Length: 570
Image (cartoon, rainbow, N blue to C red; front, side, top):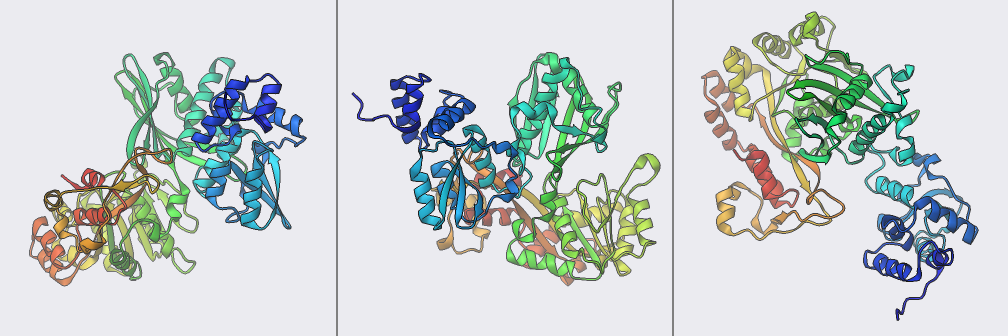
């Protein structure tokens, strides 16, 4: 015989013959073992539907049922209840009125939760009964920081997937939100994929057709993960739906197309997606880039610059003229670094213009131009126009040719601050790339102020990372001898994996090589020195290269050696 006696919600479910007594006892034991509430476990284990459980609890204990999907989550009082209490008791504060705090719970008999919250806050707590599945989504969003892109999603449930306002930039017309009955499952699936991508913090979504299969993948923290394999028979319908949403020509399947989707979550929240279709052997592959407006406003402290690197970048931004170049492969965070700098410079006293291909995120107060080779508006032509409009600061999305490079350098030499990017692997290679383009060495040496080479490494999950015991031979072979942090302060960790992260990692951090063009480096440039000579001089001057910067983040416990090798080791 079990020593567990039934009470509260479990007893009521047994009395109503929703579950039997042995199942209820097993559920209570499992909930305790997994450190969950009974209501939370019962719904997750599918012993009872969340709606049914909420209705039974409401009728049995006289608690009115509150519809959580109708609640404005911007009103949640912050910093009143500790996050650990919210997770422990599966309870979320909804609003505060005077000395009373109203807390959303799935089980109104969970008095321990109310008592502990009351004790820790000093406020009188009142239970508000809600459905367990919606409460779980709300708590997950709250704990992951409701200020990010996924804020507002917790109010959207599966029944609303086919009514979301999703379409191109002019989707107010709504003509693509009224699918026929045959297309409703496809609409729901696509909308769910888009919402799941936002919830999980993905940066890209890949819809990929093959001969016998079809797959959907998310790029999360820089790594692709397969998340779904819909039937291959849906391939053409999925691509057609995505092309309709992004205002592409659905009849044209022979050439690549570009489009844009705006997903309206509420009257005040919308998420943009940049869309590209590509004809492949077995159909059209469609990739969506999720454009996160909050990434442009992170602030320089959140990007991962070390103190000395941050000072060099900030000093360069404070100069009235010169050129700042950011370099790295696609997806290395160059745009975020540039946007962060532009936000620092963005004041009413300055005229700032940017030429981008394409403009990803709208920045209030900055004149942004989409370059278009089809109409003859390339980077060079946009830059020429900028210089006729009394600019203070100019940002060129990428220096691709000699013409653009020469105009940008001329602007930097004539009283303008110029920011731009190149696709090179290091700061030294950026300088030799400009030389190889044909830019005179004197112009490079006198105009370029700072070069930032960067990568994005996955950040170790703070919940589950564990110390790594690496032999001294490994440390030496990997180059840890170049790390100037005293070994007594090293803390090297490795990933483990838990419910809070993806394979032991959560989020990303920048790894940077920030090089100021000193007199000695300028001399090497003017003498036509190669990238090896420039790199050696930069290290001699005390500027860490990408490898050393990555290893410093390893010994600081921010990322793992495995991840440092992935992003910086050739």
